[in-house]
Length: 164
Ligand SMILES: [Cu+2]
Image 1 (cartoon, rainbow, N blue to C red):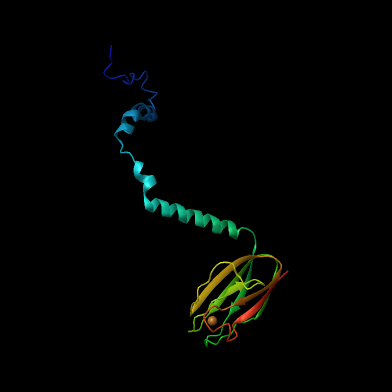
Image 2: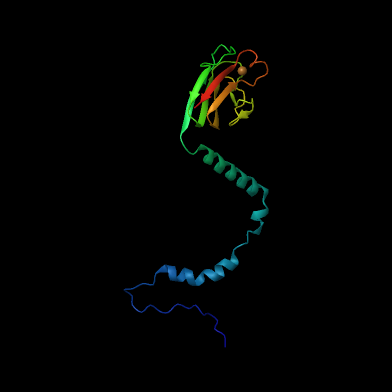
């Protein structure tokens, strides 16, 4: 024995108590879901993969930024001279950001180097007429900061950063 329509709603028992609409949608959902197209291709989509990587990167940078960040301001003159001011910085151990302003026409950047001369922290590309930042998690010790445009370090673009 087969019923042609097993979900036939019962007649309303009282006009004062209408059946909530949600009951109707629950009864009909099985047939609706069968009609929907499947989306099995989503996992193989290269765009989805790159978005996942971007999200992972963003999470990492948020993790690195957790905790107080000490911000040190450094600038170069608008003349484009190979100079930082100040040339001596002090910070407490932890997350340190150098906030660099270069209003001049000559590209510069700031890279933080540890005592072995190895660059630490986020990359700042050389730029003119603008501002940039580099952030590093630093332990106590002596560091230098330098411009990585060829010839500029030799021209005098360096300073010291003492972390205690
Ligand atoms: Cu420079």
